[in-house]
Amino acid sequence: MGSLAPPVSGGHFTSNKDDAAMIDRHTLGALFESQKHHLNHFFDNLDLGQAQTFAQALVNAPSAIFFSGVDKSGFVANKLSQTLASLGFIRSAYLPPVDALHGDIGAIFPADILVLISKSGSSDELLNLVPCVGAKGAYLISSTSVDRNPLAAICDMNVHLPLEREICPFGLAPVTSTSIQMVFGDTVVAAIMRVRGLTKEQYERNHPAGKIEKSLIFKVKDLMKKESGLSLSKEGDMIVDQLSELTSRGCGCLLVVDAKKSSDRDFHRW
Image (cartoon, rainbow, N blue to C red; front, side):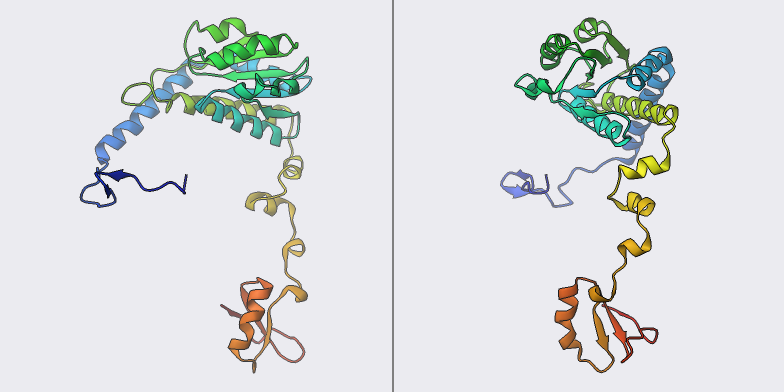
Protein backbone atom coordinates (compact mmCIF):
# COMPACT_ATOMS: atom_id res chain seq x y z
CA MET A 1 0.00 0.00 0.00
CA GLY A 2 2.92 2.33 0.62
CA SER A 3 3.66 2.47 -3.11
CA LEU A 4 0.28 3.91 -4.04
CA ALA A 5 0.22 7.43 -5.40
CA PRO A 6 -1.36 10.16 -3.25
CA PRO A 7 -5.07 10.78 -3.91
CA VAL A 8 -5.84 13.45 -6.49
CA SER A 9 -8.78 15.80 -6.64
CA GLY A 10 -9.38 18.19 -9.52
CA GLY A 11 -5.85 17.65 -10.78
CA HIS A 12 -4.29 18.76 -7.47
CA PHE A 13 -3.00 16.81 -4.49
CA THR A 14 -5.27 17.02 -1.46
CA SER A 15 -2.44 17.38 1.05
CA ASN A 16 -3.31 21.04 1.80
CA LYS A 17 -4.40 21.09 5.43
CA ASP A 18 -6.82 23.93 4.75
CA ASP A 19 -8.68 21.84 2.17
CA ALA A 20 -8.59 18.54 4.10
CA ALA A 21 -11.64 17.26 5.94
CA MET A 22 -11.14 17.48 9.68
CA ILE A 23 -11.97 14.70 12.12
CA ASP A 24 -14.32 16.00 14.81
CA ARG A 25 -13.16 14.89 18.25
CA HIS A 26 -16.71 14.61 19.60
CA THR A 27 -17.83 12.50 16.65
CA LEU A 28 -14.79 10.25 16.96
CA GLY A 29 -15.43 9.75 20.66
CA ALA A 30 -19.05 8.90 19.94
CA LEU A 31 -17.94 6.25 17.44
CA PHE A 32 -15.61 4.66 19.98
CA GLU A 33 -18.45 4.61 22.50
CA SER A 34 -20.70 3.05 19.88
CA GLN A 35 -18.11 0.39 19.08
CA LYS A 36 -17.73 -0.33 22.79
CA HIS A 37 -21.51 -0.69 23.11
CA HIS A 38 -21.66 -3.15 20.20
CA LEU A 39 -18.76 -5.20 21.57
CA ASN A 40 -20.48 -5.34 24.96
CA HIS A 41 -23.59 -6.59 23.17
CA PHE A 42 -21.47 -9.44 21.82
CA PHE A 43 -20.04 -10.32 25.23
CA ASP A 44 -23.43 -10.10 26.95
CA ASN A 45 -25.20 -12.31 24.41
CA LEU A 46 -22.55 -14.87 23.47
CA ASP A 47 -23.68 -18.44 24.09
CA LEU A 48 -20.85 -19.79 26.27
CA GLY A 49 -22.11 -23.31 25.69
CA GLN A 50 -21.55 -22.93 21.95
CA ALA A 51 -18.17 -21.32 22.57
CA GLN A 52 -17.14 -24.19 24.84
CA THR A 53 -18.25 -26.82 22.31
CA PHE A 54 -16.29 -25.04 19.58
CA ALA A 55 -13.15 -24.74 21.71
CA GLN A 56 -13.39 -28.39 22.76
CA ALA A 57 -13.71 -29.47 19.12
CA LEU A 58 -10.42 -27.72 18.34
CA VAL A 59 -8.72 -29.23 21.41
CA ASN A 60 -9.90 -32.73 20.45
CA ALA A 61 -9.04 -32.35 16.74
CA PRO A 62 -7.40 -35.64 15.69
CA SER A 63 -5.75 -34.14 12.62
CA ALA A 64 -5.28 -30.70 11.04
CA ILE A 65 -7.46 -27.61 11.51
CA PHE A 66 -8.09 -25.34 8.52
CA PHE A 67 -9.66 -21.89 8.56
CA SER A 68 -11.37 -20.20 5.65
CA GLY A 69 -13.27 -17.02 4.91
CA VAL A 70 -14.00 -14.48 2.21
CA ASP A 71 -12.78 -10.88 2.10
CA LYS A 72 -12.28 -9.35 5.59
CA SER A 73 -13.41 -12.55 7.31
CA GLY A 74 -10.67 -14.25 5.33
CA PHE A 75 -8.05 -12.03 6.97
CA VAL A 76 -9.40 -13.03 10.38
CA ALA A 77 -9.35 -16.71 9.40
CA ASN A 78 -5.76 -16.40 8.21
CA LYS A 79 -4.65 -14.72 11.43
CA LEU A 80 -6.33 -17.29 13.66
CA SER A 81 -4.82 -20.20 11.74
CA GLN A 82 -1.34 -18.69 12.14
CA THR A 83 -1.86 -18.11 15.86
CA LEU A 84 -3.08 -21.66 16.42
CA ALA A 85 -0.20 -23.09 14.38
CA SER A 86 2.29 -21.10 16.46
CA LEU A 87 1.29 -23.03 19.60
CA GLY A 88 2.75 -26.21 18.17
CA PHE A 89 -0.06 -28.50 19.30
CA ILE A 90 -1.57 -29.29 15.93
CA ARG A 91 -1.17 -28.49 12.26
CA SER A 92 -3.23 -25.47 11.25
CA ALA A 93 -3.43 -23.47 8.01
CA TYR A 94 -5.53 -20.96 6.12
CA LEU A 95 -7.44 -22.31 3.11
CA PRO A 96 -8.47 -19.62 0.59
CA PRO A 97 -11.92 -20.72 -0.63
CA VAL A 98 -11.34 -19.93 -4.32
CA ASP A 99 -7.94 -21.66 -4.36
CA ALA A 100 -9.50 -24.61 -2.54
CA LEU A 101 -12.02 -25.06 -5.34
CA HIS A 102 -9.14 -25.05 -7.83
CA GLY A 103 -7.01 -27.76 -6.26
CA ASP A 104 -5.95 -26.70 -2.77
CA ILE A 105 -8.75 -28.79 -1.30
CA GLY A 106 -6.32 -31.66 -1.79
CA ALA A 107 -4.65 -30.60 1.47
CA ILE A 108 -7.73 -31.69 3.43
CA PHE A 109 -8.03 -35.28 4.66
CA PRO A 110 -10.69 -37.18 6.60
CA ALA A 111 -10.79 -36.21 10.31
CA ASP A 112 -9.53 -32.70 9.52
CA ILE A 113 -11.58 -29.73 10.71
CA LEU A 114 -12.51 -26.76 8.53
CA VAL A 115 -13.67 -23.59 10.30
CA LEU A 116 -15.58 -21.25 7.98
CA ILE A 117 -15.81 -17.66 9.21
CA SER A 118 -18.53 -15.47 7.72
CA LYS A 119 -20.66 -12.60 8.98
CA SER A 120 -23.69 -13.36 6.80
CA GLY A 121 -23.15 -17.05 6.16
CA SER A 122 -24.24 -16.54 2.57
CA SER A 123 -20.96 -16.23 0.65
CA ASP A 124 -21.16 -18.34 -2.48
CA GLU A 125 -17.47 -19.27 -2.25
CA LEU A 126 -18.00 -20.89 1.15
CA LEU A 127 -21.33 -22.46 0.26
CA ASN A 128 -19.72 -24.08 -2.78
CA LEU A 129 -16.79 -25.29 -0.71
CA VAL A 130 -18.79 -27.04 2.02
CA PRO A 131 -20.11 -30.06 0.06
CA CYS A 132 -16.68 -30.64 -1.50
CA VAL A 133 -14.94 -30.68 1.87
CA GLY A 134 -17.74 -32.69 3.45
CA ALA A 135 -17.35 -35.34 0.78
CA LYS A 136 -13.75 -35.81 1.90
CA GLY A 137 -14.86 -36.64 5.44
CA ALA A 138 -13.76 -33.42 7.14
CA TYR A 139 -15.72 -31.88 10.00
CA LEU A 140 -17.27 -28.52 9.15
CA ILE A 141 -17.73 -25.67 11.64
CA SER A 142 -19.24 -22.31 10.72
CA SER A 143 -18.91 -19.08 12.66
CA THR A 144 -21.59 -16.58 11.65
CA SER A 145 -23.56 -13.58 12.93
CA VAL A 146 -26.81 -13.70 10.96
CA ASP A 147 -29.61 -15.93 12.25
CA ARG A 148 -30.78 -18.89 10.16
CA ASN A 149 -28.17 -18.42 7.45
CA PRO A 150 -27.52 -21.04 4.72
CA LEU A 151 -23.91 -21.76 5.76
CA ALA A 152 -24.87 -22.70 9.31
CA ALA A 153 -27.60 -24.98 7.97
CA ILE A 154 -25.18 -27.18 6.00
CA CYS A 155 -22.29 -27.37 8.48
CA ASP A 156 -21.84 -29.90 11.26
CA MET A 157 -21.60 -27.17 13.90
CA ASN A 158 -22.29 -23.45 14.04
CA VAL A 159 -21.17 -20.81 16.50
CA HIS A 160 -23.32 -17.69 16.55
CA LEU A 161 -21.40 -14.46 17.17
CA PRO A 162 -24.00 -11.87 18.28
CA LEU A 163 -23.74 -8.68 16.23
CA GLU A 164 -25.96 -5.71 17.02
CA ARG A 165 -24.83 -3.66 14.01
CA GLU A 166 -21.74 -2.30 12.27
CA ILE A 167 -20.60 1.20 13.23
CA CYS A 168 -20.19 1.92 9.52
CA PRO A 169 -22.54 4.86 8.65
CA PHE A 170 -24.43 2.51 6.32
CA GLY A 171 -24.29 -0.47 8.66
CA LEU A 172 -22.55 -2.46 5.93
CA ALA A 173 -18.73 -2.31 6.12
CA PRO A 174 -17.35 -5.11 8.36
CA VAL A 175 -15.80 -2.91 11.05
CA THR A 176 -17.56 -4.34 14.09
CA SER A 177 -18.19 -7.91 12.93
CA THR A 178 -14.51 -8.52 12.19
CA SER A 179 -13.56 -7.20 15.65
CA ILE A 180 -16.00 -9.68 17.16
CA GLN A 181 -14.62 -12.53 15.06
CA MET A 182 -11.06 -11.74 16.12
CA VAL A 183 -11.90 -11.34 19.80
CA PHE A 184 -13.81 -14.62 19.80
CA GLY A 185 -11.12 -16.57 17.97
CA ASP A 186 -8.21 -15.22 19.99
CA THR A 187 -10.02 -15.88 23.26
CA VAL A 188 -10.63 -19.48 22.23
CA VAL A 189 -6.94 -19.82 21.35
CA ALA A 190 -6.04 -18.50 24.81
CA ALA A 191 -8.34 -21.14 26.33
CA ILE A 192 -6.58 -23.83 24.30
CA MET A 193 -3.20 -22.61 25.55
CA ARG A 194 -4.43 -22.98 29.13
CA VAL A 195 -6.08 -26.39 28.79
CA ARG A 196 -3.09 -27.85 26.95
CA GLY A 197 -0.73 -26.46 29.59
CA LEU A 198 1.46 -24.58 27.14
CA THR A 199 4.78 -23.70 28.75
CA LYS A 200 6.97 -20.71 27.95
CA GLU A 201 9.66 -23.12 26.74
CA GLN A 202 7.25 -24.75 24.28
CA TYR A 203 6.09 -21.37 23.05
CA GLU A 204 9.58 -19.98 22.49
CA ARG A 205 10.64 -23.01 20.46
CA ASN A 206 8.13 -21.96 17.80
CA HIS A 207 9.14 -18.27 17.88
CA PRO A 208 12.87 -18.12 17.15
CA ALA A 209 12.70 -14.66 15.55
CA GLY A 210 11.33 -11.29 16.61
CA LYS A 211 12.15 -9.00 19.53
CA ILE A 212 10.04 -10.70 22.20
CA GLU A 213 10.98 -14.20 21.10
CA LYS A 214 14.69 -13.38 20.98
CA SER A 215 14.51 -12.20 24.56
CA LEU A 216 13.07 -15.59 25.50
CA ILE A 217 15.49 -17.78 23.57
CA PHE A 218 18.83 -16.14 22.91
CA LYS A 219 21.54 -15.39 25.46
CA VAL A 220 23.87 -12.42 25.26
CA LYS A 221 26.64 -14.63 23.89
CA ASP A 222 24.39 -15.69 20.98
CA LEU A 223 23.91 -12.11 19.78
CA MET A 224 27.06 -10.28 20.87
CA LYS A 225 29.67 -9.24 18.33
CA LYS A 226 33.07 -10.73 18.97
CA GLU A 227 36.37 -9.08 18.13
CA SER A 228 36.35 -10.12 14.48
CA GLY A 229 33.02 -8.35 13.98
CA LEU A 230 33.91 -5.12 15.80
CA SER A 231 35.12 -1.86 14.30
CA LEU A 232 38.36 -1.13 16.17
CA SER A 233 40.41 2.03 16.15
CA LYS A 234 43.40 3.40 18.01
CA GLU A 235 43.41 6.85 19.53
CA GLY A 236 45.88 8.16 16.97
CA ASP A 237 44.00 6.91 13.89
CA MET A 238 42.46 9.43 11.54
CA ILE A 239 38.67 9.45 11.49
CA VAL A 240 38.57 9.53 7.71
CA ASP A 241 40.54 6.29 7.61
CA GLN A 242 37.98 4.58 9.83
CA LEU A 243 34.93 5.27 7.67
CA SER A 244 35.52 2.19 5.54
CA GLU A 245 36.02 0.14 8.70
CA LEU A 246 32.67 1.29 10.06
CA THR A 247 30.92 0.56 6.77
CA SER A 248 32.41 -2.88 6.23
CA ARG A 249 31.63 -4.17 9.73
CA GLY A 250 28.04 -2.96 9.85
CA CYS A 251 28.42 -2.58 13.58
CA GLY A 252 27.15 0.98 13.97
CA CYS A 253 29.89 1.93 16.41
CA LEU A 254 33.66 2.40 16.62
CA LEU A 255 35.53 0.93 19.57
CA VAL A 256 38.66 2.86 20.52
CA VAL A 257 41.38 0.62 21.97
CA ASP A 258 45.01 0.90 23.06
CA ALA A 259 47.93 -1.23 21.94
CA LYS A 260 46.75 -4.11 24.13
CA LYS A 261 43.25 -3.79 22.68
CA SER A 262 41.94 -2.70 26.05
CA SER A 263 38.80 -0.66 25.46
CA ASP A 264 38.03 0.50 28.98
CA ARG A 265 39.50 3.95 28.30
CA ASP A 266 37.04 5.18 25.70
CA PHE A 267 34.04 4.18 23.62
CA HIS A 268 32.59 6.38 20.84
CA ARG A 269 29.30 5.91 19.07
CA TRP A 270 28.90 7.39 15.59
